Every structure is written in C-alpha cells, then in structure tokens.
Amino acid sequence: MNEAEALAFIGENEVRWRGRTLTYFSGCDYFRLARNPQVAAAAVLSLKQNGLNVAASRFTTGNHKIYAQLESALAKFFRAETAVLFPDGYFAPLAVAQAFAGEFTHAFVDELAHGALLDADRMLDCPVQTFKHRDVANLKKALTKYGRKTRPIILTDGMFSHDGSAAPLRDYLKILPANGMILVDDAHGAGVLGATGRGTLEFENVSGERVVQCVTLSKAFGTYGGAVLATQALREKVLSRGRVFVGTTPLPPPLAGAALASLKILRSETSRRKKLFQNTAYVRTKLRAAGWEISETPGPIVRLRVMNETEVRDLKTRLLAAGIYPPFLKYGAAAQGVFRFVISSQHTKAQLDNLVEVLIKPN
Image (cartoon, rainbow, N blue to C red; front, side, top):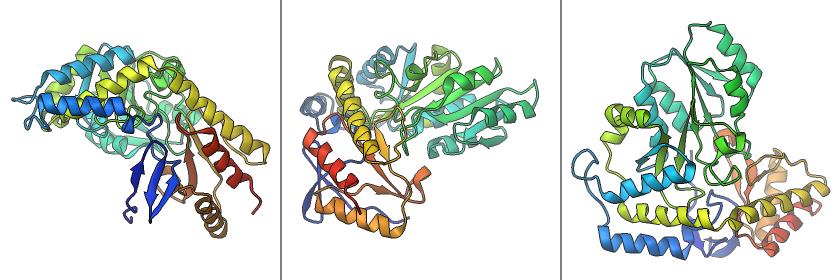
C-alpha cells in the first residue's frame, strides 16, 4: 500500500494540495470540530495547566484527574454507567476482547468489519467465523449451526465508513441467544447517528444491556482518543485484564481538555447535527434527480458506483478543474476504488452546489 500524499488543512472545508487550495469532501471530521477555535483554546489551556504528557501508565503515576472528568462526561453524553478512556480508538475493542478472553465459545464478525475488530477477535480465545455484510439471515444460519450450548459474541462496526450504512443491531439481538453479546466499534456512528448523537445504539433503539459500544474521539468529536462505554463490572474487567489499558500511556492532557470542549459543543449546539443531515439530503436529492443511484444510508456519506479507469480519470479531472479535491479511495470495503464524498455540517451551499454541478455534468 502506497502512502497517501500530504495535505495541509486550511480553515473548515479546504486543503492545500500541490500548490492549490481545494474544497475538501473527505475524512471523518463531520462537524469540523478539529479546527474549531473553542476546542483548540481548550487544548491550549489544558497544555498550560497540565503539561503535554503524563509519561506513565494510569496504573502507576499517570492517572491524572482530567481522565476521570472526561470519562464522566462521556458516560453522561452516551447515557452509559461508566466509560474507560484509551489513547486511541483502535485500542478500545482490543481491550474489551482481552477482558472477555475465554468467556465466549464462538465469535462472529461482519465480513467488512474494521481492522480493529479483526485484531480484537484474535484475543477472544475462541473460534472465529465471518458472516455476510449486514446479513441477518446469514448470521442466524451461522449461529444455529453450533447449537444451544453456544455462547456467541458478534463483532461489527456501528456505522460503516465506506457508505454510511448502519449495523442492524435490533435484528441481531432478536436472533442472539440470551447469553450472547455484541461488540460494536462505533467510531463513525458516535456523535453522528441517533436523535441526540449517541450513535448506532440510539439509532437502532437498543440498550447497552447486551451490547458493548466502543467509540473514538477523532471523528465526530474532532479530537483524539477512544473509549469503551461500559457497566461498572466491565470496567473492572478491562482494568484487570486489559493489557492495552495497563500497558499504555494515556491520552495527552491537552487532547483530553479538547475532547471535553467538543463534547460540550455537540451537547449544546444541536443545529450542527441538523445541518449535517440537511446538507447530506440536499446533495443526495440533487444527484438522484440527475439520474445517479445513491444509496439511502443514515450516515453523511455519498458513495458513487464503481467506475472504470476512464470514468475515474475523467471525474478526477473535472473535480480538480472545479477546485475540489478528488476523494477517490482504495481502503477497506472500498478496496477496488470508489469515489466517496463525506458531507460536513459546515459545507456551504455554494460548495455543495459546486460538487453537484460537477457530478451531474455529462461526461
């Protein structure tokens, strides 16, 4: 895999690339909080008060009070009993898998699950089987195969980043044995999906009784770090068995301070979420009217059909001519290469219209 070219981010919606300033429709900073002045100011203040790094595990001398503050704020935002903070969102499902090691007889993983879940399933100390992407019938068949004594755990993304679709958690719970669990990597859903932004569980209207939700702070919240939203019992397991928690230096305090500020913004400025989905609906409606087949998914992502090399080259050329950075990705579920436009709450109508005009222009 080749390393991507470097980009310099300018303002809210633009990047500097090869000497040009281009409108940006990619990444995962759905509310542009990564460049929000209030969030940046909170990071600077925390840097001055707490320093750059605690330079120790939370099990020794690195357990700064700001981590408990952030865990409490996350638990309140997501209406969870408690939360466990990690220095990166990738670590959260790994720590849960370490905490659960040996407790399940089988693990079932969505075939398009994020790499964090594919690494986590190896730590569960049980046989692992994939099931077809978001396919309830296929998962049910796999569960039935192993009989009543099975204690299964299902691993899935919450919102899938390749197209903005959501895992059908309600349907999974209907077919899941009473002693089973679901581990959800809700990196993209957290802050975005649901009536108040609490993620895929809220969107699917399911409780956390048999679902463990892992979140990241580097996408909708615009900062950094990850967390497991947990019961007190699971928190104790993660702390006692989760080597990922024990053996890492925690989040730098300035980033924890920034995360507290971004949580406050998303709680109070509900207009951001409203604008995010208005912008997404606007683009989808315009493209469908022009003949594009655009999937209706809950996430703010507009994915185009797979194109041949000539079509890809032509669209890249037209996007660049219009001052738009071409978001053509070969990653994860989009390994064959697709155009994937990520809409933000901060895109202007002029920027959205410019994008639509390029896409509906005849080849």
